Length: 265
Image 1 (spheres, rainbow, N blue to C red):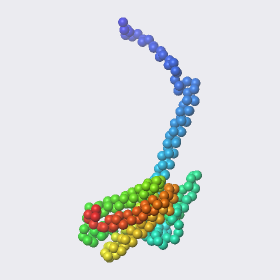
Image 2: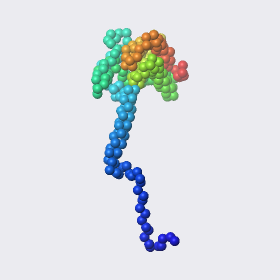
Image 3: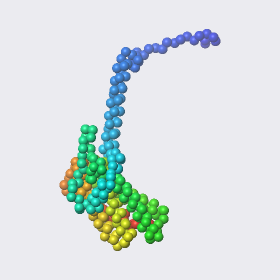
Image 4: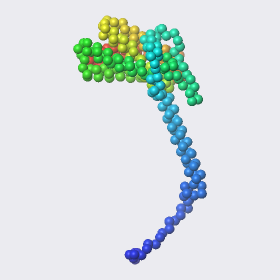
């Protein structure tokens, strides 16, 4: 028969576990502290690993915008006239937090920055749009295509430098360093496009000169800076890849300097 209404239900005592509760027994404090220390060690090491890899490959974006007028003038001279640079090409290091770090651009002329590449890229797009306007071909869609063309050219330059480093087994250079070095391409390109606007025939003198100067700048930079940071050197392969990087500037810059509605050509 079931329980009658109004009668109290009998209490059932739970059977104690033969193993006990490890988190409420006499040694629970020791177990909890041990697990906490182990978890802190795991998450702490994981956090340090992630932060070290982020700083290793991406660096701090604010670092690349610490510039002043003097740095910009001197950097433009090196990029546009690398033959006249008589100083060294290596970056200045300093100990920070127990490890070596590099001084920002404002204190080191050989440090990469993103201020000049971004300004040069924006100037390139404006000059390209002005060039189209002088020939009566300007449209918002054409300017949009020129912007995409410039971004594709910048990306190709980054990939060229990155693949070159990886081919030598030295791909440890921060990505933003490579992006900055690749972006200096647009400084000379702006002069070539401006010369084409002022006097069309000057373009055929300025664009080869820009290709040569850009190639020399990238070769010297990669040889003295990127390879030195990556601690890798392969003699014959090293020189062949540097020559390839220099020669690759001619088709890339000629393609970017050809301002037309059809951005593929």
